[in-house]
Length: 100
Image (cartoon, rainbow, N blue to C red):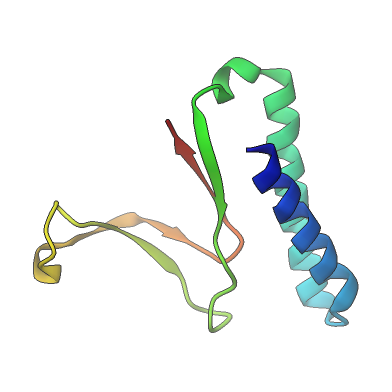
């Protein structure tokens, strides 16, 4: 897991350094601060994070106003049966923690 976090931090730092857009840089700094908060929480209470399998960072979206949605595929390939979790919408850069 530490490799994923390290890789994400390095990517964010690179994005912050290379991009001249102030709004973009501020958004990336907020993402970096969120990751650092997770690391601090892990250091304070390691027992809560023993079951973590992987941490995923959502990629930048194609447009600045789009969202990622979570779908329950109800164990079917038939998309008409799929159910969207209405109360869970994610944005670019959000972190998803996959548990073991």
